[in-house]
Length: 319
Ligand SMILES: O=P(O)(O)O[C@@H]1C[C@H](O)[C@@H](CO)O1
Ligand SMILES: O=c1cc[nH]c(=O)[nH]1
Image: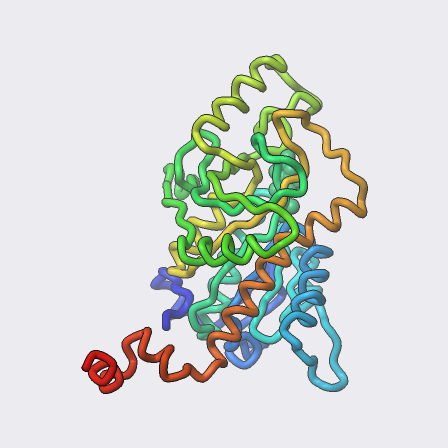
């Protein structure tokens, strides 16, 4: 099983690594003891959403906190991101947009690498605008595209443009889609447009500035639809490219707040919005439970046979 991979020769020589925005450091915290058992990293825009998810997953996986302890924001001293740990699940807020996502991912990937966490799977539990997809539906990203509809995360490094390919894990997506069939809401897959802005960047006509017409916007939305874009959000290119660089599996699951073919404003009530935001959480919780069950199950002989484990049995079956 693989560890989260960093790729930086300078890290090795550093006496201390301060994970500034997480409020942790290799010299003040025993990262292996604290995070060595992490298997699932769940990220979403707001601290509140991730705290709710931490409470939800605690119930779902029957995790019992150590006596005398309570669920705590591990990164509270940084005042930047919120991070909660529930057994093998790390729940972290990432803020809005690629720069905020990129910072926290650098530190989370280093954290998991320092901790020697085994084969962690990353999920983004987000919200988005739908492209001909109605509010309340959930979109699982098949391919994350930047504003020029390229499957890359572009960054400027030392004054040069550097592109990294975006990549989600097809197996994780397939499992999530299967689990989605059992849910009370609709889940679809498709391409995701990742923009650098919520208003003009997403072709809204309700921002402070707008130098295009409603017709221009609709033409663009229809073009997105034609090329298979199902939703628009603001972090998926960075998330899928950086997790791929770390050789970790990842998936992006977002609930639609507004169908962009019908409007721009988000009009749902707070209660409805909270109910919708729980939907990606339900899918990912079902995935985590399924994985943990598979790992703790002692395989039956027939299962071992299916996976080619019992050579002798195979012979016996054949004769
Ligand atoms: O995870 P969240 O709900 O923050 O994702 C989307 C993309 C932006 O961060 C934000 C814009 O409202 O919502
Ligand atoms: O339209 C939307 C809704 C949520 N998040 C976005 O980035 N866009």
